[in-house]
Length: 414
Image 1: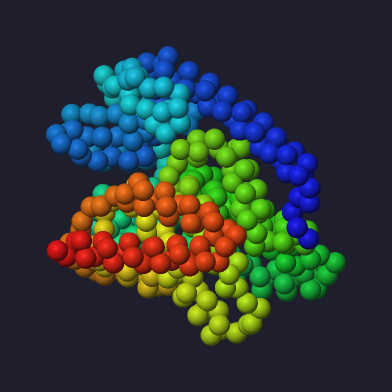
Image 2: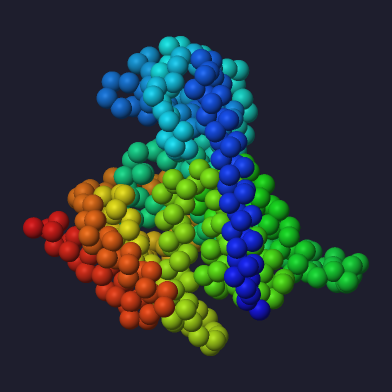
């Protein structure tokens, strides 16, 4: 069965999304008005780094407003500590506030230490603070240190560090493995009338929601979570899952609830990734089963995604290294690494991979900066949209992505 059989149903759905969008936008406007008229703020430090001769702090207020401020004082590490600020807002309009604003701080006070047991649990297992912060980012979506951001950007593996659909899938599989057998044992003996897959799916979704709440709803993870939750409902209702209508519905729901994601590049890159995945299955999906076929399909999918996302990512992130082709292999290795790293931290031996990570950080990679030319970006976007209907246009996006990679390599090595 397909979703929304008539145009009227789509119009009703669009109206509901617009209503939610307007309602949440009003709330964001109220938060913005509260912020610009405030001189005293309480906020949590999300990130702290040096720029020039001063510290830069990325903050989130109690109401959810993202701020940046600076300090010339010799600050210790305040990451994820609560602080009190006195000052005033720099020039910032409402549209800009959906991303962030700058706050001119006259005085900054550290509030009594708040408990961050999860972050402390990770930090206690590492002697290198950079590696500890990397794992904190990997597990809890905290700010990724500049060293790792530069490395991930050059190798085009930012999607591995930013908690997104890949992480959600891994965690969901782990939860299903841990819950499936025990629940099946009790269900088969005491409540056989229950649908095992329905109940386990519901438990997994609720657990993932709690995890998203702990992470403070990062955009890419929210997209993946909403798609998982809606997808589960679709499966239960016998509605076609792998469809572009499904993606459109999820995007509408997310933007209705989180209007600030409209200006979030991470969210839109995540949506583009899912769009290309759906295109892949539209033109290459077969009903044949087997492990070899599944592995082959997953490999080809990774290759296609790499070349199709390359021109889009360089519209925003210019860093390039010829070694970024390794992102295809690293995407295969990462799920195993993530599971082993999670297990190692659970057992208290999270340091086990520190040597490998320090070696990776020490690699001397030549990095070049290049932005996708606007005409090429528009042409690629046009063919990506046409690929929704024409197979030749889909192949053309793959060809353009491959040509773009070769162009970058040749240009860099000259």
